[in-house]
Image (cartoon, rainbow, N blue to C red):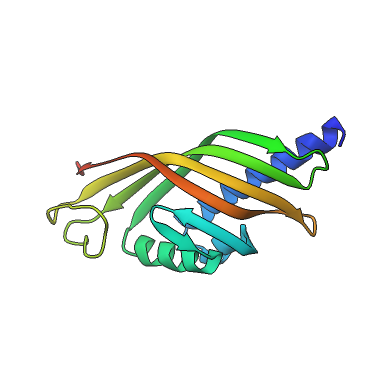
Length: 153
């Protein structure tokens, strides 16, 4: 794999990670699902299972939250020698605004008040190039820290 191929692969991998965030924040669950291989395995925040299991659970949670913002930074990519597989680790910060009185079924206590919920952690992914597209085949989502505070208007 020459340097140009390596750089192109890295750009495509980063783009897939960013598309995931775009899909999550816009509640475009078809876009989120398109980031994962059909045989994907997900382990994130106590939720384990297939891509479809994860997307359904994410939709159930995020549809209760009116505003989110997910950012990925510090993306480290290790490409296989043949350029068909990659291991990645990317930091993420996810901001969530929970409206007053809309916390039923959410994993944090809000006391019925508008709340800012911030989660920071890492996506540790195994990716493969399949039919010309980089897909996430395995994800471990690690929450390094979380905080929630009353939202200030």
